Length: 259
Image (cartoon, rainbow, N blue to C red; front, top):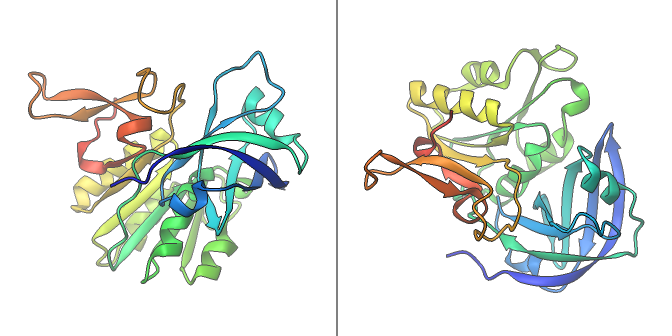
């Protein structure tokens, strides 16, 4: 059962650039960190952006007591504004939201693309037996949290499209090389990466869960703006639309239909 969600005022403690366009924000608040589960997200109202009323969803990267960390990339006006906010500012936050990852069984693999590594970090942190972690990116600038995963005790392998770090190629190639008796995979990253992973998982008979990175509006399942196709045997067409914010963002890989 998912933990109850709260709407709280959070104090921004840190908001620093990690590398390139990637930032990490640390916030202190009353209730959300204690209830957060791996793979869930928070919905953040960006201050001083009155003409953009919709909240922005951010994966929960890490929690420590009453502190919660978010790792994000500047990709638009909202995240650009967030990156300029100085510590001490209060932010209005709703969470934790969404369906979390299942606990990792033994012999698991985590696959992360870009800042998708933030959505899977807490999953690895909570795992009694640490998974193998595969991180892919376009260039070395897109490889994040390698040292943080290693500090948890995870073996980390890297791939980049341009070969500037690790294997030159896609993270799916890295997975094909790395697979060695693992029976479960958890992943988060760009949709094309997840589609390729789902196809490879099917061919390898590898079970697991994928966390979808989708643009959201309400964040609580009311507006149907973030739907994705999933299999449904009870539907005449064999599929239906699922709300990523409420029924996801984590889905069983076998139930997703990528188009």
